[in-house]
Image (cartoon, chains in turn blue, cyan):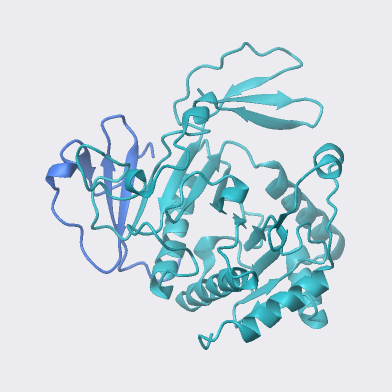
Length: 49
Length: 329
């Protein structure tokens, strides 16, 4: 898939169980914000995703 | 709920997903669910704004990894299965405005990498047999949200059109010991009359058998089976030709051109290497302000009628590229 060295992902799960995956290429994810407190964070995708 | 009911007449699955009836329908910009949340009182699907591209599970999915039991019992003649799978939304940018044509080339390159990542991750699941990446653009094709985005459906079966493509490729290989798609590309390149644009890695052309007047397919020159098969150079070339194609569309009638764009490739994990990655664009406009409807012959007979000649439409698109796009591309 070409060079993915600069691709970073942050995986989070909502209260309703649905996941989001934020992709970053030119910057690092910011620390969890107040808006993110309702979701849990994980660096890796869960196996069931 | 998400269930699959077998049509024994056409021999294909039909997905029942009644919650989709309630999905958000053309909200005003300030209530766009795909914009990052700006006002806590109006939470959107995306709780932060520092991302470049985001993927999330569709709130109104056609498939789910843990669907409720089907609403009906199956019978011998009517098999029913739970709709096991995934439906994802890919938001291209935090910005509400934009499109594949107007995003930076770097952004489109990154989007291609995200498509590759999702193809790989979703394809690892035992339940998933096909990953269909697509974009619907314009209210003419049923778009309900205008924020630049696409979708990914991870199917528990290979859907009929890719399945037929793969069967045709197998049959052709058995008969000719070569790739159907590679041989089509040679024909298109030798003929040239239907080619819209090309670069070192990809060719965009109006198919010989186009169903829509401005239908365009983009094929990789090399036999690459999936979105993950490309080198950095090929990804850059793909981003370039995708943007050039959409820019040509937008310049055609000086409007944001509606289309359905799908990616066809190998089923994940397939060892047959039958697929040959390509993009297919199905634009519903047959002329400025005129829609091609799928009516009696198409819907009832299954046969498309194209009100044009592919060679003429390819020429029209080439002329648009030559005359109206002066970006040096």
